[in-house]
Structures are given as structure tokens and as C-alpha cells.
Image 1 (cartoon, one colour):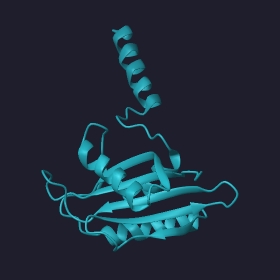
Image 2 (cartoon, one colour; image 1 turned 135 degrees about the horizontal axis):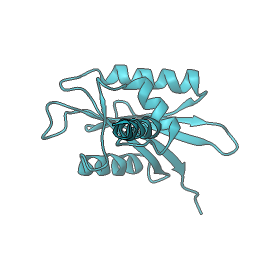
Image 3 (cartoon, one colour; image 1 turned 135 degrees about the vertical axis):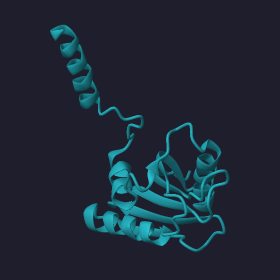
Length: 161
């Protein structure tokens, strides 16, 4: 009896130590930004297998919108709560977090420039700058209960030859 109890306790401790999360953040800056601007459980982090086409389309659009001068090197996606239309509020929270907590400055503001997406890009540092982008679908994703996708993206400048 004690052995079973010990085995169960060991399993629970292992789960607690590993966090039992299905999605591990690849980039803590993107994770922190996402948790500030669109926290769970209201909005939900999108697993890698979900909405692959929509994610790829967003990444391609961001790189094309930025004239291929930047490429996406890190990404984290969130689906908003069903029916949520507060994209501007999420963008505002992201801007507040990046400028006040991380010391970034607005680099590109493409908030109303396209029919399909809205975009902010922030820059950190001068000598070897880092870039973080926030992209949001304007419309709900097809096949979802009125959910929009938010992309938190780390960008890298593409050197010109």
C-alpha cells in the first residue's frame, strides 16, 4: 500500500517539476509578452499542430510586409477568446509591456495598413538590435467559433549585400 502511494506521489512530483505543459515557450521574451497582452485562460496558446496554414500565412505576410528585410526567427501564437473583438486593447497592452517593461521603442506601426493583418514592430538596442513583432488577424479564423489569431514574433534583420 505504501509503495502505491509513493508511486503516485512520485508521478505527481514529476508532473509538477516539468509543469505538465503541452507547449513549452521557445523564447521567454515572447512568452512574457504574450502572458501580459493576451493571458490564458481567456485567450489560449495555440499548439503547433493547430491552424498551421493560418500561422504560415501570417509569418509570410509579416516578412513580405517588411519587404523581406527581416525574417521571423521565433514565434508564439494565441487564439483569442470566441467573439473577442478587443484587438486594439491587446495591441495596446503589448505596446505598454514592450516600452515600459522591456525598454523597446516602436519601430514599425502597420496597424491599419492591410486588409488582413495589423502589425507593430519594436526595436531593442542600437549596436546589435533585436526586434519583436505583434501581428493580429483582422477577421476571425475560418472554422473557429469567432476566434482571431495573435502572433508574437521575434525578427532578425536580413543583412543587405
